[in-house]
Length: 379
Image (cartoon, rainbow, N blue to C red; front, side, top):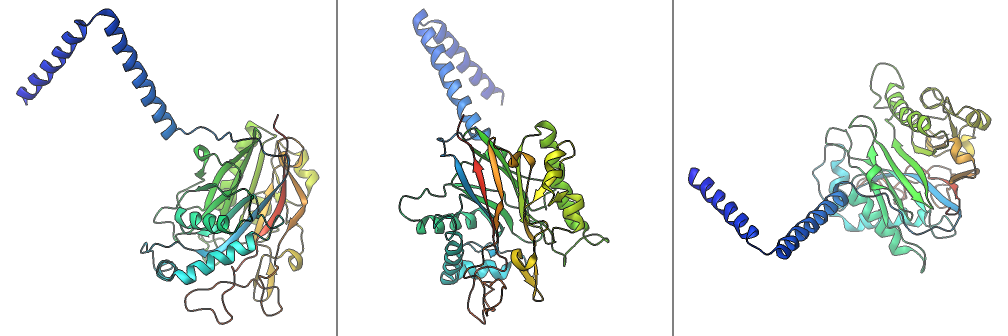
């Protein structure tokens, strides 16, 4: 060890003597080169670990179509040896390319019906296994886009940890830039709540996509306590954002596994159909529920025991109800069902699993929810 230290010290001393023996101009050149190399290394580190917010080219102002959809057990093409609940889907999609391709093609077929055949500009999904699955969905969409239509080149997702129960999480696929540096999971490690930011024309839209715990797997002793945890986690993030900027543009969407009038949604998340109450109380933030107060017969997103229910919902801040930056047209909200039903009913036609397709493979066990957002011109 001592000999190695002596050798290192001798090498340093030799380098110093060599440097001091150089002419003044040569020494200056060495210093400049070292500073440039250091600046390049710092820039690489900043870009890698602290990516800048996406700027992107200006986007034509006007309607931006947004869709949320629970896409039902969307697994990728890799066998990841998942837990007992998910392993049957993991194995099936990894080893049966025909079934996997059919699932992705069916989803793309429905998604691309919107927006005059161009598909939504921003798509949020839940029940997605992995980033790889989200990438496969984006690829399926891009492969079927009409010529000249902008591609889905932006994706935001954070995979859940191994003890989160099911291996499914929210994702966002978009034509518009997504700020990866602010993409994160909210709350504890096992909550399926993804926050990302859509940045266009200098305007920032905070988008939260979530998949709340089901009523069958609710935790705690009080009914709804698991969904309360989701509601209060999202509400806390929304309140903090509104405290910093009362005009913030904030959109929350998800499969809430409960109805708009339920306690977790109406009380804990403070989502309401009363637009006047939302706009007038920015110091006590509320959200306008785009499906709150709507008829399940017209706006139901799934069926349970032949009863239509609104579980998939969208809520917007008062900032999305003005003309600055991002906006929203609440009257445009819709639940498309065309081609996604079976047997003359309004029941979603699910894709099923490897052993369950008595009436052929459908799409998903939920209908999507679509709304037109608005984007102001770049300043």
